[in-house]
Amino acid sequence: MKLHSFLSLSFLILSAAPMFGWGQKGHDTVAFIAENHLTPVAKQQITEILDGKSIVYWANWMDNASHTPEYAYTKTWHYKNIDPEFSYDTAPNIPEGNIVQAIYEQTKLLNNPDSSKEQKALALKLVVHFMGDLHQPMHMGRASDLGGNRHSVKLFDRHSNLHSAWDSWLPEQAHKWSYTEWAQQIDCNDTTVNEEVFTLTNPDEWGRQTYEIATRIYDTTPEDSALSYDYIAEWTPVVEQQFLRGGLRLADILNSIFDTEYSPLNSFVRSDK
Image (cartoon, rainbow, N blue to C red; front, side, top):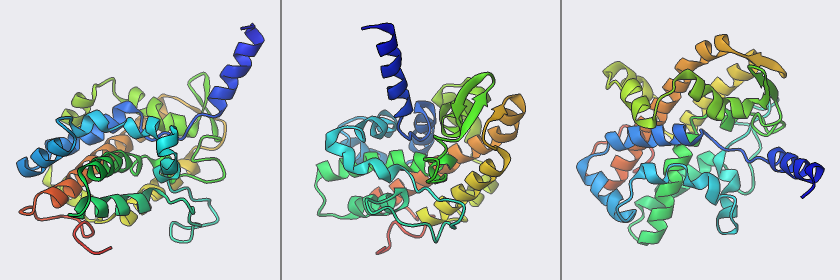
């Protein structure tokens, strides 16, 4: 292949980059925090449904699967993009569905005793992944810039975009930790922190909270901003907070579904919504 043809192909591939949520590290961290808070009953049932695999194993699977013909219908389920002329509540609905709708629908399917094991396995993988995405602020970013994918920034001296900055660059710059180290360091079992996480009790409230963070990010990160050490220092606590929120809320959802003796801290899993 000639050099110019190779470069042209590379550009096309990069320019068509999908809107991933947290990178692998983030999704694994959210899932591992959740796994550490599962009740024994819930963990056993989940292990059986996933044929011995853990939820961490499947945490990032959906980012690849959504781009295959079999699961292409889930592409829009990773986000709810909201332009500045709208609020969270007034933003137009995507006909194919969005992340908040998907979490409601898949948890309902998991709760349905008539669902097959195969249906539950897929729904479980989706919920695990989407609870990570729901807490990545750019998944509540603007429709006009594809959740920050067309919002240019510089990461030190490298040209990139706001979505990529929040996807992997910022978490990796914040701490050079494995996902197990992330969980060990930020999941402190602090009662005050846990109470704050569960003052909001359903996916719409969590999505609105993430949208408010996204709005602050846009306000403080104009197009072509140069992101450096001060940006990392300012936003690292938010990354930590969002990983922890996602993990604890995911654990609560799964415990509520798979352990009848568990007292849910959220208000929607055992409702008729």
